[in-house]
Length: 365
Image 1 (cartoon, one colour):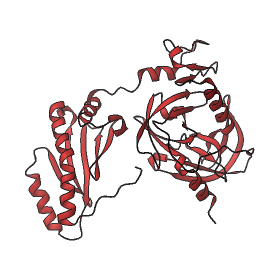
Image 2: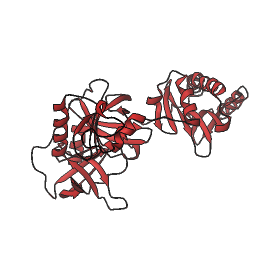
Image 3: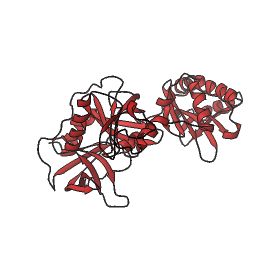
Image 4: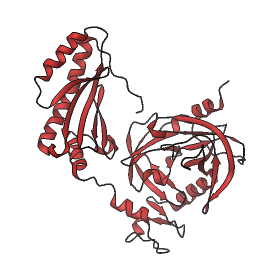
């Protein structure tokens, strides 16, 4: 017989969403045709990157943002297909009930923990939360809290730092209420005022102030401004864009990007010390022909001006390394294009001629 966590995971896994922004990663889950998550996960953005077991990285539109309940609703670009839709619990929750939290803590996909409800109703400010002891961490935010039947009882929202598994979830009935109010309005791009609680269509907000009560809406300001990279980060994104790569989908953080290239992928990272590294793992070291492989890598490096073939532990990389003050648009674009073109060629040659194993990646990384 499957354990409760295994049963809950089997029921829910297709409905669990990973959400990525320039500011970090979070979790979400599908209800009907919407993705539910936390307001602090989307961080005031109108667009975020989403992915599921059945949906490759895509851009979702944030159509509802409620900083008071820390809720946000995302519209995927097309319906997400899944076999086992999540349902809300039909029974009241109580202290001591078993709970399962599912999400992507620290980007570790589909991590599942089990615990109990420590307090079914815990008031934090004006909002009721479920307090539970299943371990959650940064990246779990926005994921579902489930009961032993795999039914939704809450939205994982926050933890108390430096505590021993003190987690809090917005209860299902507040999520149901919010969904009902939003759907009854029949409009998108809604901001719920943290003061008067009214649902305000974004086009009715002037100078970021609530038209009902006059309070400054910080979410409206962040949505209006959006994410605007500058300096070296903006330059790197312009170079990536020149490769006809969707920068939003490639962006993993404010200083990190990843995109597919043949059977592998290219990672671009901008470090705080000013170093920019673009590299791709081509293969791992074979068990034989190692000396011939080394000779080949060295001979090829003599043909490059700025790219380098190298070995890190047991993997072979093709890389471009440069200091930020030396990175220029024209030359950077030229070298990135060369890297993008050469990665599949070298990977194929190393695998075929030296019997080198392909690199392994997390399926949903």
